[in-house]
Amino acid sequence: QSVLTQPPSASGTPGQRVSISCSGSSSNIGSYTVNWYQQLPGTAPRLLIYTNNQRPSGVPDRFSGSKSGTSASLAISGLQSEDEAAYYCAAWDDSLDGRVFGGGTKLTVL
Amino acid sequence: QVQLVQSGAEVKKPGASVKVSCKASGYSFNIYGITWVRQAPGQGLEWMGWISAYNGNTNYAHNLQGRVSLTTDTSTKTAYMELRGLRSDDTAVYYCARDDGAYSSSWFDHWGQGTLVTVSS
Image 1 (cartoon, rainbow over the protein chains, first blue to last red):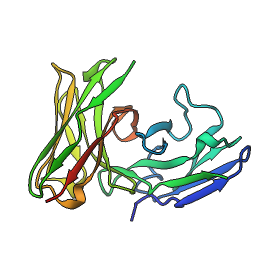
Image 2 (image 1 turned 135 degrees about the horizontal axis):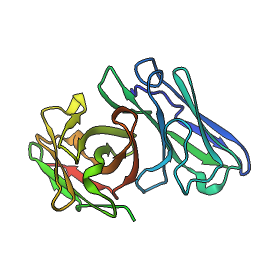
Image 3 (image 1 turned 60 degrees about the vertical axis):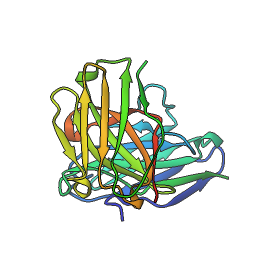
């Protein structure tokens, strides 16, 4: 059971906007920044969003992140087939004195 | 460009140890940390620990403390992850990643290609 809770799956059609949630507590998301990673099938994870809402260079502005209280959210607008991947949130956790990941959300583009 | 190149796949027997390397290039190695993450087959990502390439400070996941050791060799810009007392549930792909930003607010901005470690009798 992951410390950060994500829905196991999400789906959308091309062009749609989808949102993936990440729920935590005061010992992690409530006190620290959230990062998001994308993992395409068979590949290493890739940094998608850092410090809650910052995009690294090369990440399209279709991807956006937000945080409120003890929850965070990743939004993908203008969904494309190549967005089909697993998405993971991550944050520091005081209780564990280390980094924690969400369980991951598998996004299907219908 | 920043690159992290990991050593090849390993097959180990239960109780053995494995040491995975991660050779960095394209950046000042000792300015950043290196984080290790593993992924069991069909499962999610699990943070294993972090090492500062600047001073060798480490922080390990509680469930791995005593079995894992992270080291760096700044002369060769290489990070190492050693896991001892291997069990079947240690079978996973092991990733190294460059750790950027302040300690508890950092992010992993470049990843190695992964190393499959299989533990089987």
